[in-house]
Image (cartoon, rainbow, N blue to C red):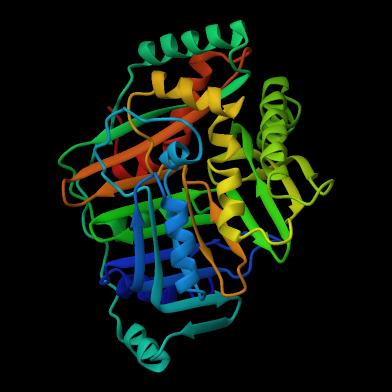
Length: 418
């Protein structure tokens, strides 16, 4: 059994009795930029929730009043605050565009060390130790319905490629929603199963009242370490093969696939451009190009772009300057976001947004909200989005299959796809 596994399960079970929870788990993936293995923020002694408009200013003010640890999420539609954009697609989840809280209790696990930051650390430890882990409840199979039929999706991709042919955009991330209405789930059980089936370095259980984000994200949006900013966009996906030799061949094919390389270099250029808004002149560089990383179901192509932060620029402003992340938008960024509002059939909301933390030294780390279930327990609405990059060379049928591949772990846990 992995180190501290039982303690983490007990701590998370107790945490879910509070209105605000942020659980971030690296699942043992080694990363030179990670500060800990697991973080659990429990209960809100202060919080801020805001719609797009002045949300970043509200977060800046909240940060000023709460200079310690804060955790929270940024929804994709904050783009409407940053640029002259709008979102008119249906939204059945009704999450805020921004929510952050300063936790009552914070647990940080690093290797063998467990640190509890709380006014009552011993009491917290005793309560967790006394937890009796409950068995997973029997989950009735839930079939997610797609917003697009396969043919409708293919027709939409063809329409997007017409825009690429005309030179309106070069590449975009086209997303589709899979959803279930009147869905009854136990969020903790579902997350536990998802994290077992698909462990990832940016896995997340986030709760705000009746709203849940159950995530198995492999992607870092943006981190700050001292005066260094780090972004690690993912572009390039290949399905793993259970046979080791065949799987190694899949990796080699991904590393040399012209379309995947083209997608990745486009998003690297976009991220480099985004980082220049926060960087000291001449410090933006690509630290690792076309890195291949292996996960439970897929291999991913991940690049690392870094820069030195301008003097006097706040952490919040640095986040705003690069949001939303290039891997989920396209190039040119604003044109791609405008176009996707026309082709997509539901509001992205927290999907393709970010979840993370700011620490007392003003470092931060945020993931990209992908491979994630979003659940509104009050109206019983369950949502999962998947997207893929559309380029001139994209094959619509293959892109549709890539979306299904990205949904595989969630479908396995829930029990089906209509």
